[in-house]
Image 1 (tube, one colour):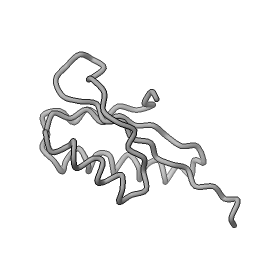
Image 2: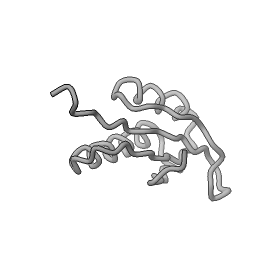
Image 3: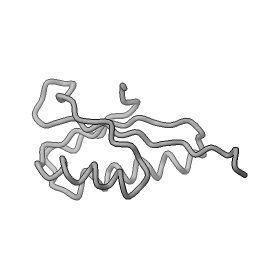
Image 4: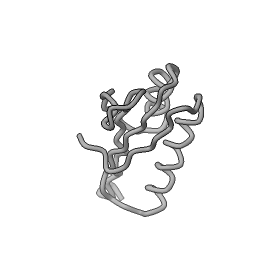
Length: 90
């Protein structure tokens, strides 16, 4: 999956990368968009490998996995998908 948005949080310690991800999810929710969104977070804090998947479990997002930073820089890219909720049950 290719992220529609990359959040470059390299050089910032956790929980800042998770906070940036939460802000991106809030913005997505406020758009009332029914489409899912794939977001990438670039982070070089080793704690991100634990914090980002844990945040996904708590917030109903899907942790897709880790990739090499697409710009060839330091850190890891963490791929997350915000899942659109269906209105069919209403």
